[in-house]
Image (cartoon, rainbow, N blue to C red; front, side, top):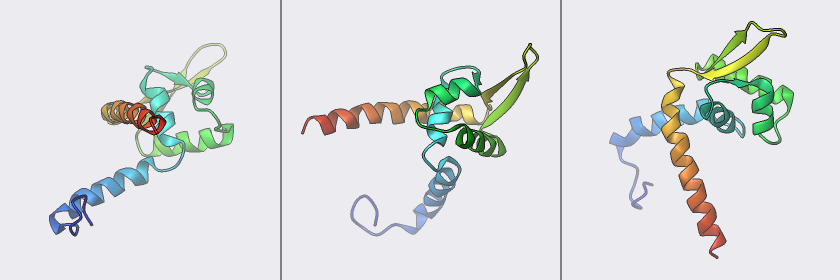
Length: 118
């Protein structure tokens, strides 16, 4: 059923597939928070992301970053310093998610306020 209570229209199948594709790439508890952490900085070190995303383990962050890199949403940069620093940046492609992150943030604030009104 669509939002209007009527059946899902066939012409919206492509839109539904696009949403499902997006959700497949951004699925899980951690990907959106990781992207958000990197989104607000030009470059983010592993330890910075680990501190930003409360509750994530080293192992899970490493796994999620590899998946985000595989899906061309983040890129891993090696900075030649002593000691060597590994940083993560959003790709050109994933920078388009910033407006979605901003909209999710605004919606989250509104939703939390709505729930507190009860």
